Image (cartoon, rainbow, N blue to C red):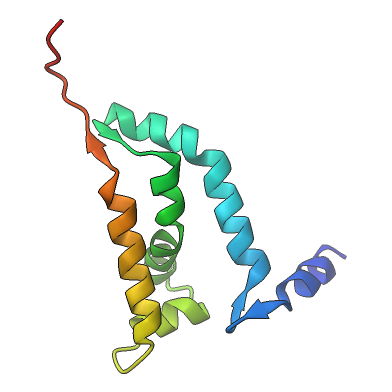
Length: 110
């Protein structure tokens, strides 16, 4: 029964990409961003929720590439012969995501 619901929700697509999976990814990162930011703050990086949201698609492509899971977006991004608009969008998202990441300095003077 659960697979019927997921199959139904995944049938809605924009440009070959499932709306449900993409929206679920953005919602998950939106909700997890405070925890992720706190964890990365321990490593000396200050990452805003906005940066995490910009990085959702690039991180998704990386994760799917490393796991060997072939999604339409991953295949199109890795295709060397086309899909330049997608590649440009992902590059812009990476730039916007990294633009607001700041390094925390441990040697703060009081």
